[in-house]
Length: 234
Ligand SMILES: Nc1ncnc2c1ncn2[C@@H]1O[C@H](COP(=O)(O)OP(=O)(O)OP(=O)(O)O)[C@@H](O)[C@H]1O
Ligand SMILES: [Mg+2]
Image (tube, rainbow, N blue to C red; front, side, top):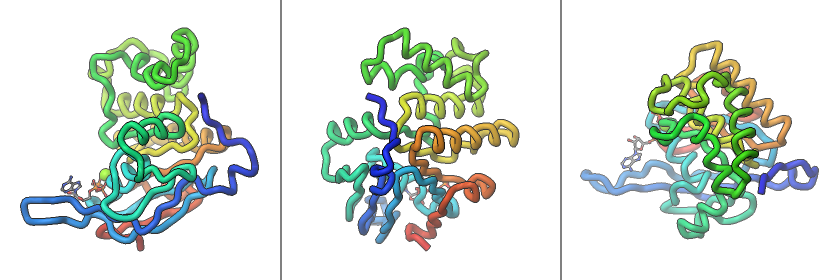
C-alpha cells in the first residue's frame, strides 16, 4: 500500500492542482471569506513553501489541499482526483493512500506512546504489527527520539511531540507530505535536522513536499514559494 513516486512519467503529472479555490465561513458578523480565487499546480516531486502573515489563510489552504476540509468554491485535484467532490469516506480513503500530514497543533493521541502514535497509520493500512513496530521505531530514531519510544505522547515536550507528529506523517512513505509549521516548536539544531530530513525524504522517495512556514531558511530551501496575503495569492 506504500505509494512511492519513482517513475519519470508520474513526475510530469501534477500531484496537486487547485482551481478557483475559495473558502467562506459563517461568523457572528456574517460570512467571512478566508481564501479567494486561488489557482496553482504542484508537480510530483516538487517542494513548495506556503508563506504569509499570521491569519492569511495558510492552515486553511493546507487543510483543503490535503482533503481535511472542503472548499466553498472551486476544486482541489489530488493525484488527478477531484478530492473536493468526494464525501468524507472518499476523502479519507484518498488521504490514506497518498497523504502524510503534520498538523500545526500536532494532534497526537495523548494516551498512546510515541511508538504507538507512529505505528497507527501503518496499522490502519493493515501492515503486520512487527513490521509496523520496526518501521515506526526507525522513523522515531530518524527524528532523534530513539530514547522516547515508550513515553506517552502527552508527557513529551512540545518539540518532541512535533517530531513524533513528523515521524507519523512520513512512516507510510506518502506521495505527498503536508506540514504546517514543522519546525515551529524546535530549537535551531533540531529544526535544522528536521529540515534536512524533510528534503532527504523529498529526494529519496520522490515525494512531494508542501510546507507552511514562517521560517525563511526553510522556505528558501523549497523549490518554490507561494505567498498568501489576506486570503489571496500574491
Ligand atoms: N472556522 C473558522 N471560523 C471563523 N474564522 C476562521 C475559521 N477558520 C479560520 N478562520 C480565520 O481565517 C483566517 C485564516 O486562518 P488560518 O488558520 O488559515 O491562518 P494562518 O495563515 O494559518 O495563520 P497562522 O500563521 O497564525 O497559523 C484567520 O483570521 C482565522 O481567524
Ligand atoms: Mg496556521
